[in-house]
Amino acid sequence: MPKESTGLSLDGQGKPLWLSLELTYRCPLKCSWCNNPLDFDKYTEHELSTEEWKRVLAEARELGALQLGFTGGEPLQRPDLEELVAYADELGFYTNLITSGVGLNEARMAALKQAGLKQVQLSLQATRAALTDQLVGTRAHARKLEAARLIKAYGFPMVLNMPVFRHNIDLIDEMVAWAAELGVEYIEFANIQYYNWALLNRDELMPTREQIQRAEAVIQRWRERLDGAMTIYFVIPDYFEDRPKACMNGWGAIHLTIAPDGVAMPCQEARVIPGLEFHSVRDQSLAWIWHDSPLFRKYRGLDWLPEPCRSCSEKEKDFGGCRCQAFLLTGDAGNTDPACSRSPQHVLVQAAVTQAVAPQRFRKPLIKRSANGVCTSFMEE
Ligand code: FES
Image (cartoon, rainbow, N blue to C red; front, top):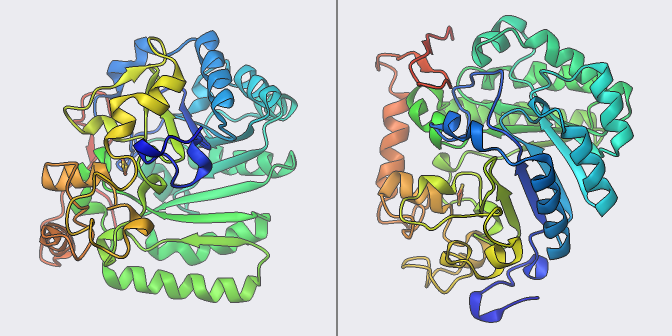
């Protein structure tokens, strides 16, 4: 039901086509680029129950949601994952599990298959055990490889997701070779976005421009060699581009995230923006939150755009960029995303790159995701 006055018709015809359920923020890993909130542990006691999640699923399907990602944290931490997948499948969702692979044993894989799960996205940071384990802060590599084997053995289409940053970007070549051998259908080299834990570690994690160019060349060679047998995604990080990304395809356009405590958001990071009014599915219907809540209407459509976006010919491509990044870097979510070279504050992004890649800079230890944020480790490069 498009409502023209709210700008709710960019695409998806006003429907939240993409639904992400952050079932929990609990996770056995300690990744320094995690996009969960810095105070993630404060939500643990307030997670939605199985019945509450089922109600959310039914309401979202009613609103027209189709694609469903079960994510976290680590969604396998929830013992009711299989029950929720089965219910979602019954409702007609295309279900996708987004997992680190830790906790994915054969019994759970079989149960997820039985429940109707359609696709699995597995994250893997490197093909080298010592590096993976050091990056994620625990012994996880062998369990990830076993998860990859199970995903293929059970016939799931597999998306391999490699979060990319300075420490592993030069290993893309061996990652594609490994994935091709395993028969992976899709591989995504996801240059990390600098929010939350990644922003804390931005200086250490940001690759150099030369690394990005080398990675692009490697990927191009693989695309030619594999000739369509595997789809390879690689998007240049927006800190190194002239234009911002069309984050979420526009605020409140097609994407809906539900946090573990039931708060509904236009993206996974929106709680970093102060002054917004958040609502939980415990207190409001999803239909009201999606169509009418001040949160979803705040930056929906094009009417709110500031200059220079308002008069920019590319505004319908990028919608002014990412609201969360605009807030984190400029202090105002209503500004043009400074990743855009037309932003008056683009210098902030340029300065961040210059600072991060300065060769003489003292390397700091990575801050690992942890409940109190004090766990650190130096990385070998
Ligand atoms: Fe929130 Fe981009 S991550 S709008």
